[in-house]
Image 1: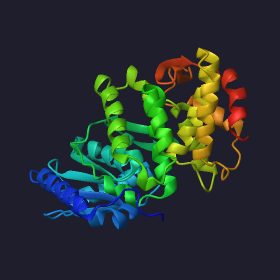
Image 2 (image 1 turned 135 degrees about the vertical axis):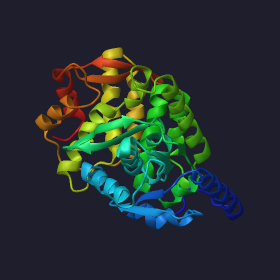
Image 3 (image 1 turned 45 degrees about the vertical axis):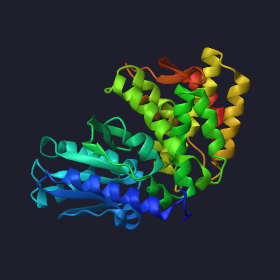
Image 4 (image 1 turned 90 degrees about the vertical axis):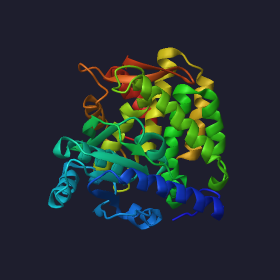
Amino acid sequence: MDKIRLKKDKELFDKELSFFNKKLNEILIDYSQIFLLVDENTFNYCYPLLKIDRAYEIILIESGEENKTLESCQFIWNRLLESNADRESLLINLGGGVITDMGGFAASTYKRGIDFINIPTTLLSLIDATIGGKTAIDFLGQKNMIGLFVEPKEVLVNRYFLNTLSTREIKNGFAEVLKHGLILDKEYLYFSLQEIKKDFKEIDWNKIIEKSMELKTKIVRNDFKETGIRKILNFGHTLGHTLETYSLKHHKNYLKHGEAVILGMIFALRLSIIKFNIDKKEVDSIIEEFKTIYDFSFLTKFNLKEVLNLIDNDKKSSYNKILFILLKDIGDATFNNEISKEEIEPLLKDIILF
């Protein structure tokens, strides 16, 4: 595993960690029982940084999108029930998007809902998954098919968890950073593209984290249930979720969420040229930048027919219409753009191996 994503000044690190744990323990005071949800990675690399001052139980699940299932939820519910967890209990979700999505869903449905807090440990969960109150599990191979909109009681941030991540996992999360720039802030997009070229410990992570959290939070506050403007946060996700679902089923080294979203955004950018006549030269330049950051040479081929069928089941489709988020310009997104399969197919062939 690659080491050290942030410059670590020991005095500053100790001070921030002490504040983090103080805040955590203040939250725990009012609850009858405490449960900590982890996977093997967060248990080994992140859990040692926690200093919880009262009794608690650890619930350990296997990592990976393939485990974000109803069966894993049943395991969590069983553990809560076996421990006689009442409605005044608290579940702490320590992990990335899989842990926070599934832990939030499990907590929100146990005895009609117990409180949960999220402690994001990946860049993806820090700037995206833990913001906005989306909780979900995958079902019958479909991404995030069963879930609720429920806000965590608190989101506690310790940026030094980024030091535990691999290069691939950092880039996985950075896809959402790039998305925020594409849909909301052109200047931020180009700043981000320059930052990701640096040695990771030289990146201005504070600015990246703060800006992305600010952009997403502003959208979510205006449209919590995703009936309007919040839909633009799904840029790249209509095809992205489809490719992620397919890859999880068929590829041994399957696509991570952010990698699938990058491919989805490349598709949506190409589609935006056709539908809104945005600057092709600028789009081509951005796509070339993406290709220098993300390597998809590990992928085997996709089946075009199956991919097209999977798009039909996407949550963002409505009334049997396939809806895409597109750009009227870089930094200016529009939602509810109906695209036919006949338009999708030829463009797909130019982007994905079939």
